Image (cartoon, rainbow, N blue to C red; front, side, top):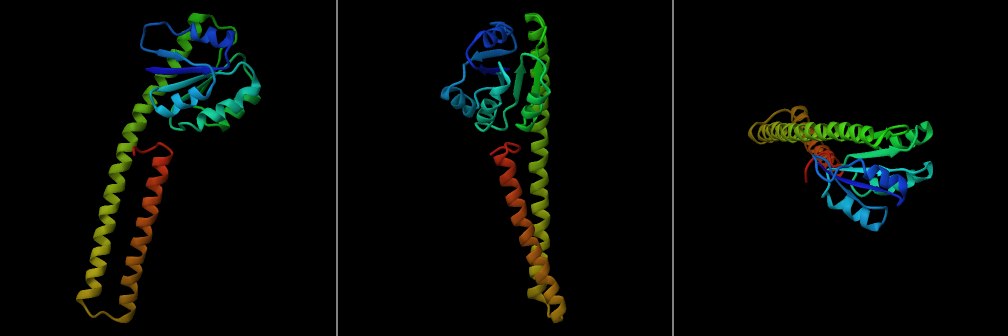
Length: 197
């Protein structure tokens, strides 16, 4: 798993960077906060972002990075438990929050590894869910096309009463409106990163 590790340059960021061994299943690229970090987040070259908050004033930096790629799993590291900061981070849709107060380097490594592996499994599950969603959207559109086609044929082939014709036109209008809503829903799911482009 390729991790982008970021935060304000300093001892705390270096301590967390030391928890990632040079070799292993978690490969961390350490990059202090800069415009380059935002470009790295946007590039989608990483499987997750781990952001180290040295103090509670840095939640704005999290918000800034989250806008770069909202679908990328994002782990926030806190030096100590802080309910107010935790609440602010959840409001930013952070995937996971880890407090490392009192942990050794080995414990930090283990805790981060467990958290990141769990997020990786969640991503795999999310991919399977998005594939099911694409399939369901296709099936629903096919059914709507059949309904609309039959309603239009009924309007052309027979001479129903005016009230029956009005009902058939309402069916066609309803299908057209439902199609428009499905296209908007699919577009929004893609923008949120919940469906592939």
